[in-house]
Length: 187
Image 1 (cartoon, rainbow, N blue to C red):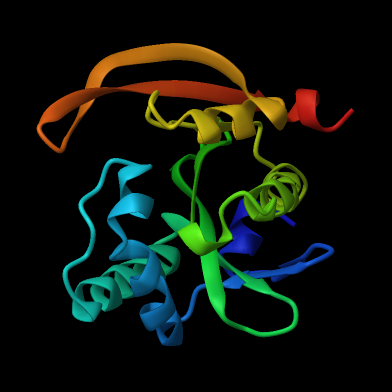
Image 2 (cartoon, helix red, strand yellow; image 1 turned 120 degrees about the vertical axis):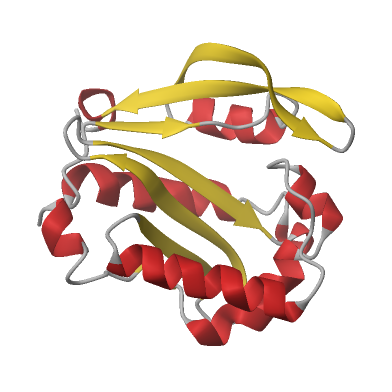
């Protein structure tokens, strides 16, 4: 499968506990529970959504971005039900360099349960094998130490600090660039 094929057929992935499936408009309410939570959105430097309509518009944009070949967004659900507890995406594609940025979020009720640590390897493997990416980048806030540790645990190398890149809640935050190459993942 190539990147072109991914934008024609969006795959569902599975792990031991999780179903990682394409985002749907019916997921708006569950995503609102994440995107309206100030503790969750602080991890990636955004203000929480103020209404369900804000989140519905965000979901619609992700679906439109997929149609425009700009974004691939999955949601995480536990296998025993289809309730959305988090999500993950590839975006900021550079087709010439076969590079994309990975992003992810998780409802705080599921933090420290290994959910993201379980989901991301499946998504990264898909990115390298099915999407034929050469490089995947993560750009967490430097203050998001859990995210930085997770990426490093997956083999991402810290490459750069962008000083005071994000203005959030009255102060500037450093942002990091971590990168993972296909050859370092698939050996």
